[in-house]
Image 1 (cartoon, rainbow, N blue to C red):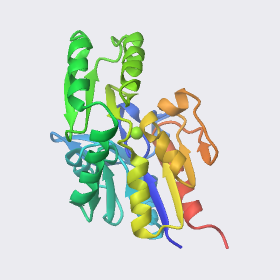
Image 2 (cartoon, helix red, strand yellow; image 1 turned 180 degrees about the vertical axis):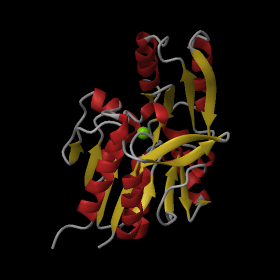
Image 3 (cartoon, protein in one colour; image 1 turned 45 degrees about the vertical axis):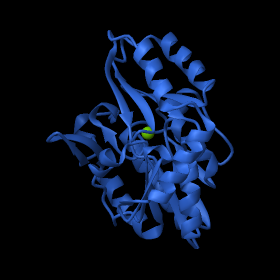
Image 4 (cartoon, protein in one colour; image 1 turned 60 degrees about the vertical axis):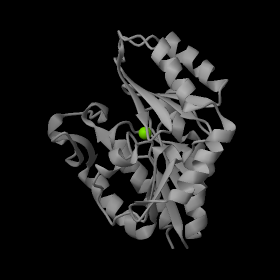
Length: 270
Ligand SMILES: [Mg+2]
């Protein structure tokens, strides 16, 4: 049986220092493994136990990192376990096969975007016009596919985010707020479409998924079974659906629990 595991990375399997949410006495905190260095500083972690479980999962299933990160941002991450044969980057806009970009897949995605939603240029212009420099740190475009802002979260007006979401919705785009980043992503640009493509190519009999943000909702719905942590946009919205398990764990220990669930589902007893 071929089991495909498509999992979001940030705040699902790997965590920045700010997202770890370690609770309890320091002396009892789990030991952490740094899996990403950015500008010579440690950036993302998982627990040592999660690292071991992830390596095990790589042997038990086709593990597909499924991220909104650009290819460049993804390549900074050094996960334990065998190198994944497939990785989904740019929220489904890029499929890496043995680490190399699949250009045919990318062309099929850009054709869909051109046909089905407002162009990136219109969204960028709107963000430039309406995002207040008082709380906007950076305007970014990812892989020429979608845009995001880096913001001062404490100063960000909730109302502005709501208005942006409505404006975007009318143009076929989705807004997602994750930590210090506000993403504007075309609705047809999905992790689930890319996961289905990998499932087709690998002949997967069972698909498992996990994710924490609104951009993961379609992925969780598309998989046979899925999990979300007790933190993040989906948890904040109390989001659930048939086949989706809402875990109570928050922060980096949730990543460990998700990997345990993946392994249990990929290696059923008996
Ligand atoms: Mg995430």
